[in-house]
Image (cartoon, rainbow, N blue to C red; front, top):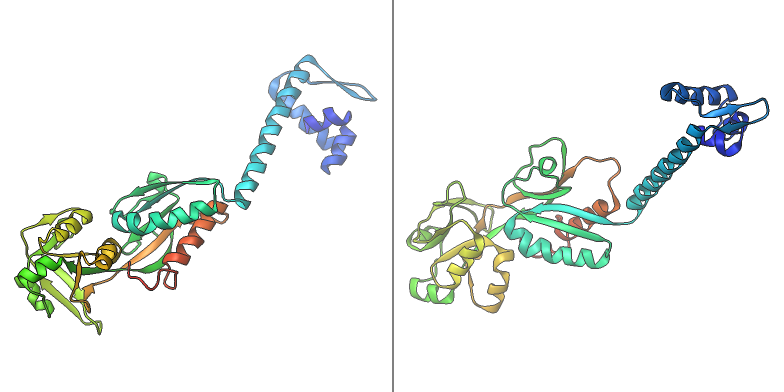
Length: 296
């Protein structure tokens, strides 16, 4: 209001432009003077002129208002155009084999967006760690988050042709007990594989083997080296299966699928970058996404 009075030259004109009474405009300016303990305007019956303090205050106010206007314009632009950095977290295997190739396509479409991706198999704490978006395997218990379902996370069994030639090809899940099974240490019960059959029938198989590891890529390499049967996401094994380096074991069976979700904080007005990447990932990995023909 003070700037309006200065620019228009009178309280009446400033009040008219703001849609308030001249008395209210004068009251606003007097409130500033009382707070500062200094006179900003020399008032006469015909016009107001700035005091020395008023001149300095007017300059600073105009700078501040210009910054506010720029901030408003920037906020509106971010709402309209995908722009800025997006921090995201995803599971290690799914993130590296599925999310990264998808993000390369998204970034090609939106050159003003950058992505800071963290790969972590632990359930993400978005707010604590400053993530705007996450992919979580397993149920989401935080009621403050929006959880959009993706296709279930599936794992399949595979082994090298050399291993199967030497150890034989299992025909039934029960035969896994006599094979070298490559196990993941971070699974709560790594000596049990919870399988589901062609008709959806569940089977819990006790497994053993000489190789135990905490990383899926190491398990994949162990399978390639002929150390046994790996149970890993199909996205990790798909290229090796296509090239014949690995062979699907018990193709009608897979690990019990886990629910997977795209998660983000509730926000009535998300930025354009967040809106577009959510839509993009749901298109690719949602229940009816572009990759629906491949288990991930």
